[in-house]
Length: 329
Image (cartoon, rainbow, N blue to C red; front, side, top):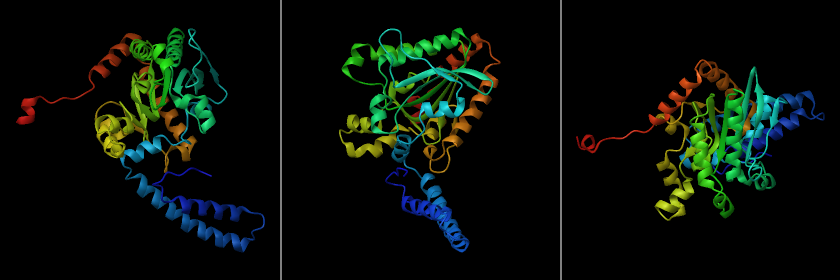
């Protein structure tokens, strides 16, 4: 049974719809009953679709955060399976400390393109989330990513990153092993990698842990993903010392895809199916595949030097400010 969010008021109707469909498909249902059931199915389905469209067209920022965190939302491994099939070979370890399961990476093939694919990995249940540390990487995870990026550069493979993490792991061991330095190294290395880099924020892009895989030639967000310097809960705690201010914090952070596009931080938004990505993995994977093909056909026309110059200018050009005199004018 799918897991519903609190604001998804169509949950009861959708469950009833599934029961009607199961009854219609039953071998014990005769033709007359099937016709009657189909009439009910059409009516309930229309109601469900209408309600979904209404809800998802008016999501609040914090509701968007909840959608981005949905436990059934596709993960990096899900996308790899859909995009590469069996043409993927996972690579492990940072060659310094160990293998961090919160970040997966390896060589894959999508269409005619051989690629290095790297991404945060959450789980779809409690056991898997514990195994993957809820997608929160340790320093060795980012150092593994750096190692794979250099390998991609050596073999002239474009790099695809999937970003979905609450943030880098803040534990004592991670800090002792140089968490902040690993993130800084990842950013520095990505700025100088001489192959195309395309980044996709697929779920929750949180803080430096997300940014560490986010310095690319092109940055896209899925429609209901979020990307921010801090979580809404963390922002509410720091600025207001009040957990109840979480919705105000989410609004203030401007963390939705459309906000980031307006600010010039990302290059585009990929649409999600009605009810978000967890309702149709294939539809989202198809959008990502089309985007990869489109961008690589453009980026591959540039020399390595041109890529670096354009990447530098892209990030130097981010941000807007207004002079005090203009504010008072």
